[in-house]
Image (cartoon, rainbow over all chains, first blue to last red; front, side, top):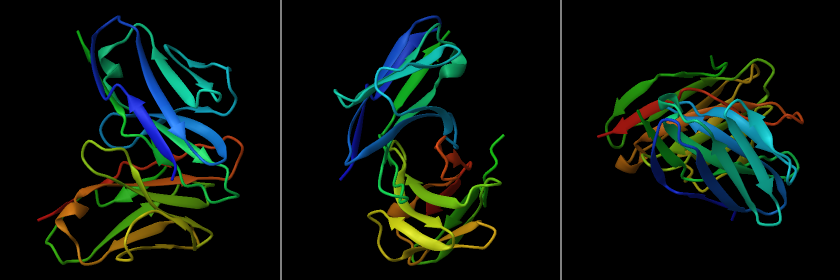
Length: 113
Length: 113
């Protein structure tokens, strides 16, 4: 059974701080790791990571995958109140078309002014 | 703005009733997956449909069933509702491309009383 564990479960920071969110996984035949931001309902796609050591960057957000350690981190620099959300990590197995994506429980980030 | 549309947005049902939730996938996406997200949890995979066939199922009982139509829209049906079925139900569409990533709808909030 595939498994995703995220830490911390929740985090409160002040605007301007830098945060690092962690994701570790167990999956049979890894294909990719996904990060999503969920503010109210629909999770919105942030990154897809398939190769170890290659940083993906989008504005103040960046993420990197470590296949040896079976983990990924999501960094947010200069946090803003609009970054307050639940951040979900998910893994996709390489199972020939059947793509059961397994999600972690998420990290709830609160950014206070 | 998400290309995946779900209806209804909110729903209240009584224990024992049946419910149908609907999802219109993003243009060009032929795969639809359904997830259940209980409060404080990550989304849990229910099942996936590809070309009108069920293409994988998570750990949910048979009273959770689905359909996919020729236009790739989909329905999730739940019979004999239980209180624990109260959750946010998310639909995600995807295309089988190298740039894999789900597009989620805004979800249907189901409350069973």
